[in-house]
Each structure stands twice: as structure tokens, then as C-alpha cells.
Image 1 (cartoon, rainbow, N blue to C red):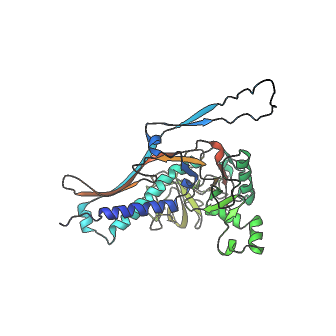
Image 2: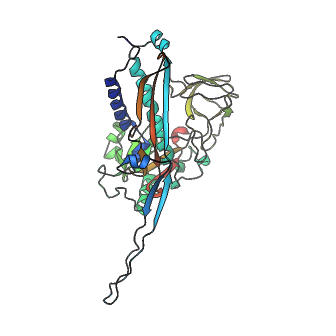
Image 3: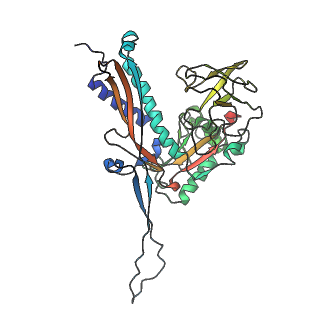
Length: 399
């Protein structure tokens, strides 16, 4: 019998497998996480998870007496508690819409959209944990980082500094492991940071005289004890740095919808073609705004600004309300140095480490709606502060 369903159970299984492979390859901040234990079902139960710690022994300095026995030491314990969370999103269409507007390979297109949403949403939880730690360094306050000041940019020396910090705390990070082997350390950086590193300091000299693939093939590989991972999904604190000399600080004068290629602003003062602006709330402290986005100004016509953004059509990635800030201050780029185990994670075994797809489900008394979505139960936690170092920098590409 013909039905409106377009996915068989076998296709659902295949898409779930593809989804997990996609997440494993493309995740960013999840790379820093290792499972908190072997038996996930034990950790996910209840509304709070308690992770215990036991102190080390005092250093031995005494000699062994022939007359009296050793005095046993006492260990000290402590614990940290973390609350599990969940995430999930869904798309829903009417049966009539699918009948009248059925596109070729519709289910594959929906699957692509759903899996990308799951990737970004789950990794955003890990991102928030990784980028809000108390172990960090920067040249000055975030709001004063200046793209025009070379001392505020990331250099190879920052990698040595991060390595020294992790070494000082003697974390079990694989510092002594051969590069690229086992639990060796790595750095997660944005492409604008990578640009400054690749075009300055000893990296340029080595690329010129010893290792031309750094420039020709864009292969830096390792710097200090860290494998370098350049990810376009790396967090950027858009317009959170120093105000531009030609400051643009305005707001949207009309709501903007995702995929829009133009925005309307209250004032076009200092909005210049070719420059980035950030739409959204300035991220000054530990609060992140997931709908903040940077766009490049393509042209200015009065208060109507044509932009290029991350949307699937080159427009806006997110919708924005009337009155939201539009600014061109220098952006701030966080770098993270750590290893697999800098943060920890756990999940519900029933829905899996990266969540579960829920595809082509029908709703309604006569099955007149169909939905595709995903769900995830779990949490990330930075249970030990000394396992991860964050740096914050401006970039010359913003100057």
C-alpha cells in the first residue's frame, strides 16, 4: 500500500550511522572531552552527578626508623557536582506540503539540515564549558584587545606559554607522549588566528627555508607540544574588542530574518564595504549569545546595508529582532590548548553519545503531519580547572 512515508527503517539506521560518523569527524570542542566513566547508565541517573577526587600523598622526607613504625598519612577527598541537561530540535511539515512541494531527494536534504543542527547544538554545550574557565591569559581586558596592536595577536610564543602552564600543573595530558601519539595535546584555533601565526615569527622562517608545505599546502601540523586544529566553527567574540577608529555603533531599525541579504540600520555612519560587523549582544564576560553573527558589508545604500553572511544562500544565518546592536569593533578570538580529557562528558546510553535522530515521524489523528528531529541527553563539565588553558587575541585580519 502507498503511504506518505519516505524513509524505511533501514534508511533510518543508515542515516543514524552517517550522522554519528559526521559528528565524529566534524565536532570541534567535543574533541577536548572524554567520557567520565565506563558505565554511562550509572552517571546519567538522577538530577545531579557527583564526581569524587582524592588528594595525593605528602612528599616523603623522613628516614625509616629502626625503633618506631611509620606514621600513616591521611588522604583528603573532595567532590564536584554537575547537573545533566538535554537538547533537541525538530522540523515539521504538513502532509499536503510534502505532496504539493515534494523535491527530489527531500529526505536527504532534511537529514543534512537536521544533522548539522545537532552538530552545532551539542558542540555548543561543549564550547560553553571549554571557553569559560578561569585559567586564561590575554594581553589586556577583552574589551581593549586591539587588532592594530601586534602585542595583542596570537604568536608561536603563546603556544609555548600554554604548554608551560599545563606542564606547571603536571596534568595527565600526554606532555611526554610523542607528537601525534596517544593523548598528546592540541590547540583549537580560528582561521584568523592561524593567519597571524603562519605569517609571522619563526614559522615563516621555517616555512621559507625548511618546510615549504607550511605555506604551499597550508600544513603547519604541530607548534610547540600542540597539534594545531584550525576550525571554522571556532568561537569568535564578535566586536568584543577595542572600538574601531572609525566606529560604527548602531542598531537594526527593522527585524531581520535568516537568509536576508540586506539589513536596515538606524545609522550607516562608518559602515564601510569590505568590513565585518557583528549583529548581536557584545560578549564581555562568561555569557555567550548563540545567535550573534559576523557579516561582511558588501554595499551601503542609505540605511539599507547589503551583507554577506553564513546563511545557506550567503545571507543571514540567524534572525534578529528590531533594536539589536550592529557594531564594527575589533573581534576577539579565543584559542584553547588542552587534550582529550580537559573536560569530561556523559550521555544517556539510550539516545547515544551524539544524540539520536528521530526521522519521518507522523502525528495527528489521520497522520497529517510529519516531523524530523533529534534529541540528546547528557552534559559536559570542566571538573578540573588546570587541564585547559584559554587565550584571547585580536587578529590583524580585523585591522
